[in-house]
Length: 120
Image (cartoon, rainbow, N blue to C red; front, side, top):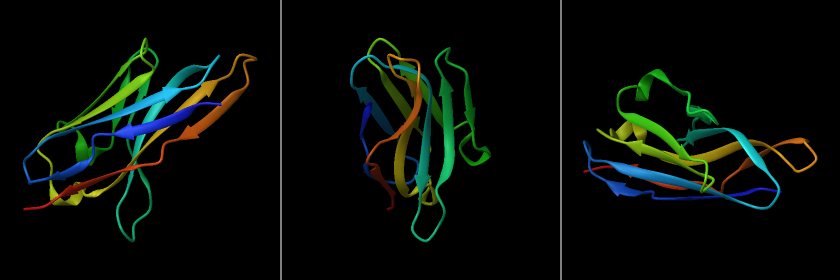
């Protein structure tokens, strides 16, 4: 089973930057896609960015040009660089991973979330 641990959230002023990290741990797994989601108060969780094992990325329109997703496969870690942050980016950010275990069975895992608050 894979465990995901996010870090890097915090309070930042509008226009500022944060870098989120998502570290995967476990044994005998292979991650083939990772995603970043966020959930603001009283709103549904939304997909923000995805990145495949080959590095292909996709972003929701509201963050295009401001957020960049990357990953270090050797460290089993994904990153979300967030620039030009806006108050509407305030949310709990979650990491998600699609992976296969040593027997080739496919699973999905979630991190515990990290709070991002954009406010002056």
